[in-house]
Image (cartoon, rainbow, N blue to C red; front, side, top):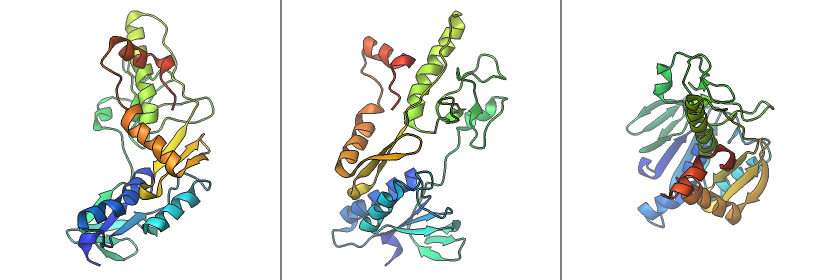
Length: 252
């Protein structure tokens, strides 16, 4: 098998899994139905989807087996060139396509704020999403490390949290200017929806990621999220104002 038909995905988290499980069908569409594409996920962790926990993982692993997605766990990408990658284990994989999905960081804009940040570059904020050490500055979305509740859960770098955080940050910035009470950000509910290509999807609820939906039903939910839920409201005053009201923005 040549490098043209091989894709290496660096990172076995949400983004890496979604990219890898979508690849086989797309490559057969491009290369022909008789093609035998090879997709390999490389991750330094000892298990795929390390953040998902033991509950959903068997479903993810079965989907990958069904799709023929390979894994190289406990190793990373040591070198990359035009014809492939060399892993820290010493293995060489010939591949003309490499997808990097090995983590995220906050935008460089956060470095312009003289305040404390976490290891992802996110600014530490209080419950109003205010950067405590810099008067008049609020942070939200991927730029903020914000507590979701009083149980020690923090917002993730995802649209699920960013959409609701944005409504609270905007409300509180305006409230501070007007001298009216702010509203503390809170988001107790949490869900994940992971697409698995032709193998369907999984939908979990709660920070413990309890499996709720699988297969076609979960796939339909994922498609709704991607095509409807995450988009801005209609260009109507009432819809826009409702979307900006922090107490009416969905937690999911």
